Length: 107
Length: 119
Image (cartoon, rainbow over all chains, first blue to last red; front, side):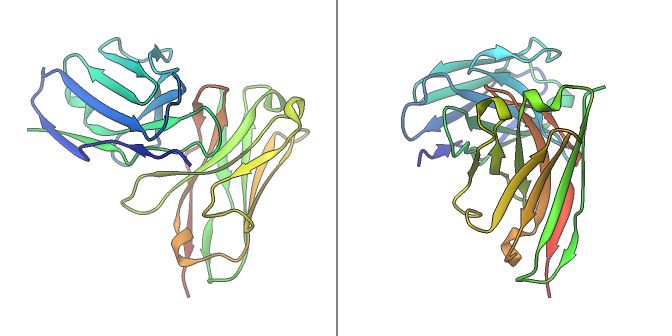
């Protein structure tokens, strides 16, 4: 099975910083990747699908890129409400594995 | 409003069974695959399995950790998806989320239901 890794597991950043979160697949998955945001104590929310398509209603400061094995989620200017854990998920075929998550905290 | 509501969670002893339900509203349930995702306390998201829509055969796929113990089914007439969990283990303790599975992502999530497996 394809493994999804998200190094590092946590990031400490300042408000207004550009934040880049990485996700790596152990084998190529084309652009079959989704990103989710989970704020503390809440359910996950879809941010991006097909590696780079913004889900309706998601702020434009979020963007995604990548194809094959390496993907990134970028927050252009971190806002206080962006404190959350971010997960990637492969979506090409079962198992639909999630990455371990990257927790974004304020410095 | 598009909504998923899980029910059926609770405390259960190891080795016993439990069935979770996911009631959908606000969309044509039968048009979509449905999936279950779980999250152990303080841990990340783990995909459990999904069931395709009838148009795609209504077939199922499962994570290796639950295959042979868990079964996903659906009743399109009632807009309900089920997760039957047998031979439960302590490591199955988690919040279980029901999700609407588009072809490219899980776009709608329920609020989750807690399952605690303990003696």
